[in-house]
Length: 447
Ligand code: ADP
Ligand code: ADP
Ligand code: MG
Image 1 (tube, helix red, strand yellow):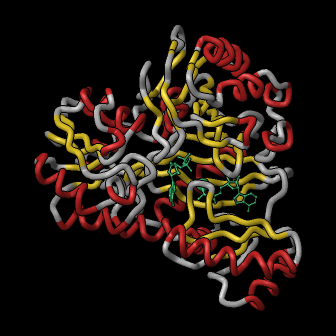
Image 2: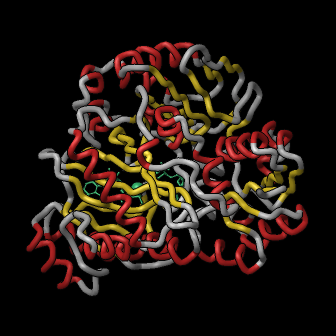
């Protein structure tokens, strides 16, 4: 097992990784930008190094600086968290050439699935259903128009290197496709460094269901069942749960099998997520693989009882998975609400600033994964996620009641957050009945 691990991230996920390392008896080295200097969670690490100015491009995204901190800190491995360098195959490769274990998949597997179009192609080849669309990146306007005529409007233009809900554009007709295509290519180039885009049929009113997988370095692959992440705004998740409500058992099995098949075909190792959309008829279609730990991993941890961060570290250290597929079951229901520093009434505008008062909820079945505290200043430089409120209860109705109670206890003063919106969602009958789709939030509360 590793003696020392560098945590190449910030905020709640950095704290989450530090906690897992402590329980495994591993020392931690944290890194921080000038904007995060003095953050309370850094004190829980054994060492912490400043790696540059506030802008992520000058600090958390700088491979040279992260590697320097790892060398100075004398670590054997790096946990990348999510976002930042977590899905950067070049970073994984540099780690390997520096003899530092990257806690994640190999850079080859990451490069394969990180190209969303290549992952889609692989899924198709092995018989995993994909959304109808292009076989390759779009070569020309005529190519796009031809395809759209075949699959039918509306279509979605997607960046092959996209992520985080960005780099996607709906085109409802030929005119929109013509004008959208060039813009999408230019945006993809600017945001992700590659102009490649592909087309998918836009599935109307879908659900988002994804499967957590774990694969070790000895050929063992298991799934940890599914998460429902249908409640989104701007293609970004806000509420997640496991198991997925109203999912028929045969579809659940098929989804999980498809995920395992894809992971095996990609030679993928460590933790990963295979994402699908489900149409109104209950057909599922692969959309992408996330080659990292995900924000919403705690709901899976609660229902399966498996600590995914510890599993990632053990797998990277070469240990075989300590369980077989038949040992992994879903017990009870877990729900997570993402607490963001955003104003839901002002189109989710970020609300950086000082948290003047903070009361956090507790009690049976309640987990609050967060790095914030009274006096913490939410920085305008990074993602607006400031905490994750997770509940675990025997049944879904109890989980909803528990979340409502916990949300009512949670008080964050000084800045606007997504808490009031979560209260509305959790008390809505459509949510209680599991009758929501990815457009539910934007349709129900247009702001
Ligand atoms: P999850 O599927 O884990 O919920 P999200 O899509 O919410 O993941 O992304 C998690 C974090 O990673 C967010 O901070 C998001 O902005 C960031 N992220 C994911 N993919 C990319 C990408 N390709 N480029 C930039 N940021 C990304
Ligand atoms: P990202 O890499 O940004 O996470 P995804 O491909 O996972 O992008 O898509 C993000 C979200 O966009 C999905 O969760 C879903 O809500 C929506 N989406 C993606 N593809 C489609 C599609 N073909 N039809 C309808 N909605 C889609
Ligand atoms: Mg996604």
